[in-house]
Image (tube, rainbow, N blue to C red; front, side, top):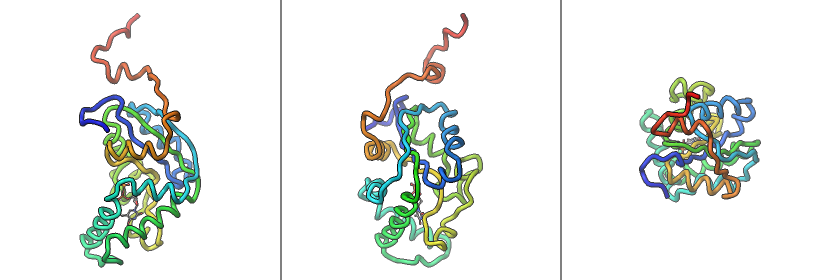
Length: 204
Ligand code: TYD
């Protein structure tokens, strides 16, 4: 459990989804987190199982309700009629599509560390629906998908990346995807210039 004070040991989970791998964007995506000053402390390539995907999305016991209600509100806000009225039924459908999407090929799972890791990564990644993501973000720059288009295709929205939504969520997700021994503790020389109070020792 983390407190609210920013720390250089804050961590977040990122998954480059199958479309990110298939579109040869692994380097482009990791570059953006890396150049922000974050430190990569774990990385692996794997093909997730449907069970791993379901567990990942339901680590928060409230996720099914929240996602269903949010989706219904999204339809109503756009003046559209939701295809189902029960939030749990809507989520069940979203989850089935997510399982199909996330197991369709290899993904890259990573843990990135640094002050404000969770919100910084969310900012660099951009909003969940690519149509709405800001220009300059990963999703805004590389994806043209929308909920409307993905719903028509009866599939998940292809948004390249998963990034944890909060520090608590991040801790649970990191435990779900990585064992302790897969996460490395090491010093990155640049941390001195990013975090240290005194910048000295530059001149010889
Ligand atoms: P969500 O938890 O709302 O987003 P985030 O992970 O950014 O906090 O949704 C989980 C994933 O499901 C996200 O990648 C978007 C996708 N999704 C769809 O494909 N269709 C939908 O109708 C919804 C609500 C989500």
